[in-house]
Length: 601
Image: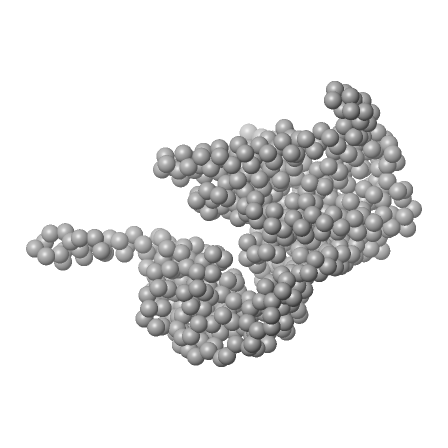
């Protein structure tokens, strides 16, 4: 019995092709983003064969943006956001202005009108939420100062685009397109003598302010209370459902009732929940869906791409790409440096913003619908977006390889990441003996400018990955026993605690080859993998066994399948929580005095 299933077909085709191409990309050591985009091109309307539903793909992509911004909000507080307003607001506005002027200049060369150039330039000025946050999360930068600057910058761009999308329809006639109809001001706006444009601006500002106030006053109390109430039911399924309902519901309500973007609504929902002790669990519950829908976002971008634009207008595509990647990056770099931040911060922000995405497509499509920009301009925006998204991971690789790595000289004492001129010059660190505290393992600025990472001096040491409930106990015991120890941990708060306790710590990605080299895994005696995720642990175990066949690897697992998986990859000892609990109970029951159960340890 045949069924019309465009939604299922779009999801299956998108995820299926993304998976197949990602396997190939993995073998070729390419970014998986390239694979996802290529999957979208294959099922798009400009290539032969199956064509997925573009509208459905875009809506699925929006779910990814919502969940991603909700997750970012969970790592933020209002204080964090306000702490970077001095750079985020003028920085975002300045970079938008530069990119828009560059776009207008290119439009003039192409013979397009002033209105066309304005809309085209604005479309090139705003970075993709998904690409920027993905790059930040991969490098564990969200909770750092540069991460807060990037997110604050993104929020300002988001607000500017919301206002832009509201204003373009009533201004379409002035911009060279067809106006959808003049709406006369009424009520308070008319009494104040405001024009239709002034009334639109006023209404937009009131709506945004009302939404922010509602979230910070009411949502700040209601959302954490709801999750706490659900948590007390003891149902994990209900808790997961509550998290999804809150993130998606607030995002949709923000768009439907207040005219705010989905992304901004989701961010505020996460931010008000960040003050709850359940925020970390909420982030974990949304992670699988967030990753899946983020893949569909890149697939949807690929579907928009018309390869013929590369043949018909190659020079125009190149100039568009240069505006996005070079023009925006230089503007962002100069602005960040102008505010006194280091080159490392400026380069990171520049690389993060050197691409465009979802708002660019919305703006370009709206411009075509209102006859403000031609179809060629829309195709150039899409081509520029796709190429810049492909290039973005390469920019970060170049940043790591050619800017940061060459600076790894003998370490100096840490200085402020942001304002080096405020710190006095510090003497060089002496070489450490095995087992001594090593500040060099953390990122260190060279001349207060660029972060560097020094390799550890430890040998015959233990490397502990994860400082949670299990890892913290292991670290304490090893440290008290005088065993040379280095800890790899993601949480910045845990990193600071470890440093305060005199334990060498590194906050980079554990499974990265360079990270393991810095920790001298080849000279280590033990590797203790205390993270609960079997997939991530397996990748780490496999890498470690290749680098040091003689190292003794201890890991944890939560199932018999995970035990077999980790053992097959080279782990020597795998401890399963339930099994160890059962052994402890049996030992206590059978070996306590006179057969009586013993006391709890």
